[in-house]
Image 1 (cartoon, rainbow, N blue to C red):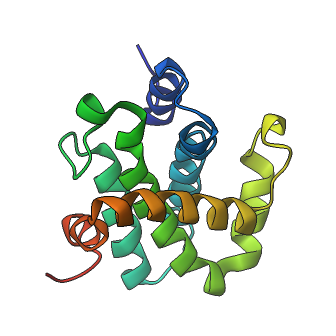
Image 2 (cartoon, one colour):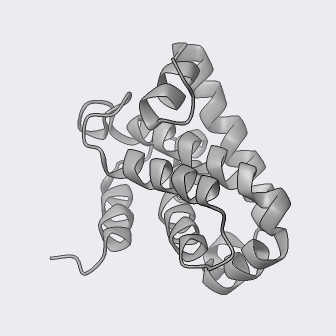
Length: 150
């Protein structure tokens, strides 16, 4: 049994066979982006609009049958989740850069070589955007997550 959703995600990601550097590197960040959004949500100075966007991203992560379901697509099924998490984090970064960077440094394990938040977000955005663009599901994913009107 898992005590947190974050533990569940980490265990699930570890269970995937290697899909190559392309997916493996990116999906390893999912639980940490999830944790970062949760920490930001706990902050008192986060606007109502930002809270809505954060909740959309967190909800998207836990929806079982999203645009690319993990139970069908395996590791690739986390690419849409990753995209939504990163999309919202990149929106929040200009307003909350210092606190987000501090939170990131306090939570990211050393196995990630202390990769700075902006680099991690940019790398994961590029990887997830490539997959979603190839599948022509960028807008569908944002609409499903409630981050863009249809």
